[in-house]
Length: 415
Length: 107
Image (cartoon, rainbow over the protein chains, first blue to last red):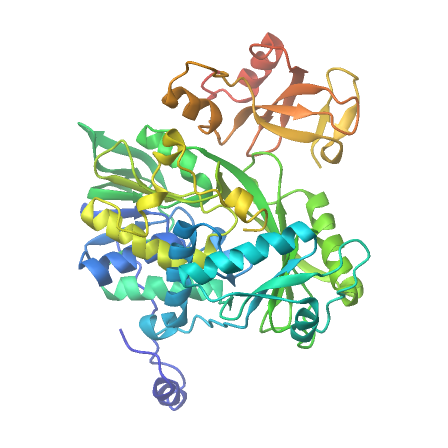
C-alpha cells in the first residue's frame, strides 16, 4: 500500500494524479478463511482490523451484502462521546473515543476526527441532577467531563436560546474531547488497512445460510457460493435477528428506524455538538456547513430505512425551540437507518450457543462513536474465544441473569 | 404515514394517534417461572423481517389496546383484531398466506 502524505499529493500533482492506487482490493472469495466477519460496516471492519493488528490473525474475510459502510456507518450523525453513567459503558466508549484520537495516524487515512466538544443540555431539574451524577461517575471512571452552568453553555453555543419557552437551559454535561468524525472515512480507512494486511473485503456478497456441524460453524452460504471458516463473527446491527436466526438462536433485540437530516449549508455558527434530550434533538455543523440533525426512533419495529414523518417534525420543532435562528433553514436531505435496540439499551458482545460463533450487536442508536472500541473488544473475543475486560459485561447471558447495564434509564434518550 | 383501523371504535387512526406496544402474543410468565422463561418473556423477540404481530393502543382515541398484523419490510398492514385474541383471526391468516406464500406461519 502506498502511504498517503503531503509528499504523495505533491508527487501525484506533478504527474496528473495517475499514480494513485485503489484503496482496497476487490478479490474473489477463497474457499476457506480463519475468520469470517459478516458485515462490512464500521464495527465489522474494526473487528477485522484489530484481529490483524492486535492478534496477528490476517486470513480474514469481511462479507457485506451491500456496499462498504452503506448501512448505519454511513447514516449516523457522526457524534463521538463517552459520557456514560455505567462503568462498563464508560470503559468501552472511552476506549473507542481515545482510539479515535489517533485513528487518522494509525490508519494513514484522514477520518477528520474533530474533538470540538459536546454538550448535553440539562433542561429540567431532573436532568441537572442526572448529569451532575454522570459527571461524578465519569470522574471516577477517568472520563473527563464537567457539569457547566447556563452562562457557560451560552458562551460555548452563542446561537442557543437559554431562556427557552418550555425548557430553559439550566446547564449541561460538557465533554471537551467529544466531537465528530467523518463516518464514511472510518469505514474506508479500516477497509484500506484490512485490505493492506491481506484480508478480503467482499462487497455485494449476501450471506444466505450459516452451516454448522456438531455445534460449530463450518462456513456460510453466500450469493457467491459456500465460504468455509474456522470462526464466525456476526456484526450486522439492524439485521442481527435475521442472521442469528440463520445460526439458530434468538436475540433480545428489536429493530427500528432512526432518522437523521441535514440542512442547507450555512456559514460556521456552532463549533460544538449539542444534544437536547428533553425536547429530543441533537445537532452539529459539518465542515461543509450543513446542520446535521438527529432525533428519536420510530416506535414500532420496521426495516424500511425511511422512518415516520412526524418524527422529523418533532425533532425540528425541538431544535427550533432551542435554536430559534434555525427556523428559516431549509432541510436538504433526510434518511433512515435500522438500529438494533436491546432491553437495557446496551450492546451485546458475546459468545453464542455455537462454539466458534460470536456476535456483536445491539449498539442501537449510538454505534458510530463505539466503532474502534467495539472492534478492539470484539477482536479479542474472537481471537481468544473468551471476552476480555472491555467485553466481559456485555454477554448475552446478562438478560437471563438480570445483570443489566441499564443505560436506558441512565442515558434516557439519544444515546 | 402508517394507518391502522381500531377494531373497537372503527376509526382509521394514523400513527400519531396510536402508541406502539411491541410484539403480540407473548406468553406471560409469573411467580414460579424459570429465569430462562422470564428472559424469553421480557427480552427475547421475534423481530422478523416480514410478517409481524404486534400490540397497539389507540392512545389519542378510544384508549383501547388492540393487535395488528403488519409487514416490517413494506409497512403493509394485513389487518387489526381485538387484544383478547389468543391468535390472529383466520381471515387475516389466510390473507397473509395469500400475499406472502413463503410466510412460515403465525406461531
